[in-house]
Length: 137
Image 1 (cartoon, rainbow, N blue to C red):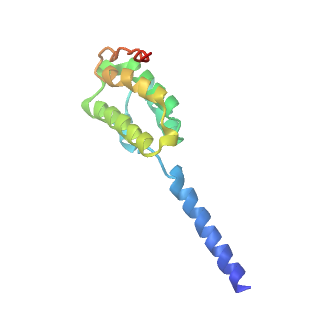
Image 2: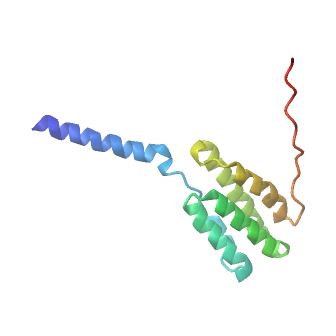
Image 3: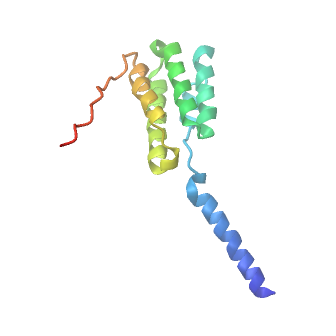
């Protein structure tokens, strides 16, 4: 009877370890973003709230697009703390994606290329596509 209890206990510990160790805890801290936009006008706060919900659910594509919508709604009126919170959330999201490759999305990176300059009201960064080299015959 005792070996079965020991085996069951080890199995439970192993399963808990796998759950916690496989990206289950990977998240983006959205508290600074929420604080910075707590008193923002509704046309900006609405998309930021959507972004917070999406990022907390690890839906980085929806979160990034909601942040982009917020910048389009009110980039001229962002305070310095709001700009800092936006830059910070981009960085935090990128770190989580790098540390958890299963969460990485090229689409999020594409949105960030537009979002980062939009925070300051600038045009998106354009990076020319390069054709792959021709194979040698």
